Amino acid sequence: MGARNGMQYLAGLREQEREVWLDGERVRDVTAHVGLAGGARAIALLYDLQSEPEMRDEMTYVSPSSGEPVGLSFIIPRTREELERRSRMMLNWARATCGMMGRSPDFMNVIFAAWAGAADFFGEGGRPEFAANMRRYYEYLRENDICLTHSLINLQRSRMAANAVNLQQGTALVVVRETDAGIIVRGARILATLGPLADEIAVYAPPRMGHTQDQSPFVFSFAIPCSTPGLKFLCRDSVDEGRSHFDRPLSSRFEEMDCIVFFDDVLVPWERVFLLGDVGRENAIFQRTGSGVHSGHQGTIKNLAKCEFVLGTALLMTQALGNSHLPHTEERIGELMLTTQLTRACLRAAEAGAEPDEWGIMRPDALMATTSFNLFMNAYPRMIEILQLLGSSSFLLTPSEKDFKGPLKDHIAQYLATDSTAARDRVKLFRLAWDLAGTSFGSRQVLYERFYARDPLSRARALAAMYPKGEVIERVQQFLGRDDEP
Ligand SMILES: Cc1cc2nc3c(=O)[nH]c(=O)nc-3n(C[C@H](O)[C@H](O)[C@H](O)COP(=O)(O)OP(=O)(O)OC[C@H]3O[C@@H](n4cnc5c(N)ncnc54)[C@H](O)[C@@H]3O)c2cc1C
Image (cartoon, rainbow, N blue to C red; front, side):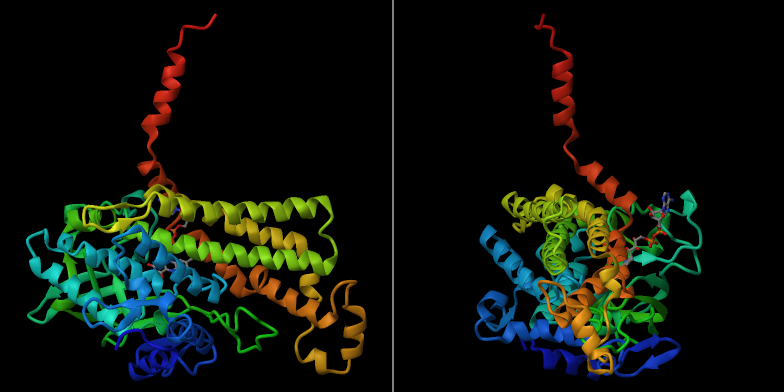
């Protein structure tokens, strides 16, 4: 099949009914449900971009197996040029969603590309079939342009130190038995973003879990179709309430949904198992394969698109309000520019510092990719705070699309205009800003950036573990040892 278009993606979702629950009801067709259809359309538009004649070269590459054009985020980059080509493709997708869909399909594609390039790693524990499974599955993803969600975290009954890896029996996902057909898994996981809108779900452990040998029943990596019997997706409230694009410009377009996933004795066929009970390999997977770094690279691109969008919105807000000359406005806009440029710098540095890894894959600079993750989990909430400080009551001077046709339309046109901006343009802009900074869509975006790449403590530890500390310590020690000054 090769690279899909939007219609093919939507048809795939309809053909493969999965068990999705939202607000007490089973959703039979996610592409038609008011709370989910907008997000499905947004992903469909991303796939459409691949088939636009003028974008095709930038969005796809020629499959090494079928010769068909396939999505460029599946490429296993072996050169700097391939890495940068993939980067441009992902920036096109990120800009198409204003950076608001963290789980555009490239999020998972780069992870599986890294794993497939390092497929031998999966067979090193004496199970060569797992390496073959990984190669075959990656090829299936690439050739069919499959959209994946993932779920890494076990629900927690307690946050006591002893339970730090969340492996409570009866809650955490566990292998309950092995059969000739595959493994049977039972339990629950969070938080499958894009769950209802994906074709398949990948399940594995997050980085740096440090599992011990006695935890081996909880240690595995696999992927199955979202329609697999026994798999149940429980959605949070949708942020898309069916309002118009004018009223809720972002919520109505980019709801990517987050789900708890229940696994009721789900059969995972052997050919879909990539690791099983192999504690050493599961603990090492991110470091050895570089998948976390490739994920950080993809995330940095999304962050850049998001920064650009928030900054652009802020600049338009100050133009509309006529307050761009005020010193504290300049200071706040300067802070948004700083975050945007630091993110751009992280992206450039991650690519400039890329080196071939032990598998011959061009791996972006790990420290820069991690720095970008850690920067953004604090910087994005601050960017949104700045929008709130800039906008103040203007966020609430936002009549709806219906009001513009109602009995007060002349009042609205007269009183809500500013010196530079007609009332309708002002309201349209501030409705966008409110969707970033005030609605449930905007709040969920902030929560996403704070936590999607694990909690702040784990992120800080990850950075500290890889930072080349010796160099800076040595410099200070040399200084302390100097006795040549009067
Ligand atoms: C919008 C959103 C989308 C997400 N999407 C996905 C997804 O698609 N797939 C996926 O697998 N995961 C996803 N996640 C889950 C994400 O990986 C987790 O939220 C993250 O790992 C944090 O885990 P937690 O939510 O259980 O937080 P908790 O562990 O409850 O942490 C809450 C706070 O308490 C602190 N804390 C907790 N325990 C301790 C302790 N023992 N000592 C000190 N401090 C502690 C943490 O640092 C944190 O600040 C998503 C999360 C969000 C918010």
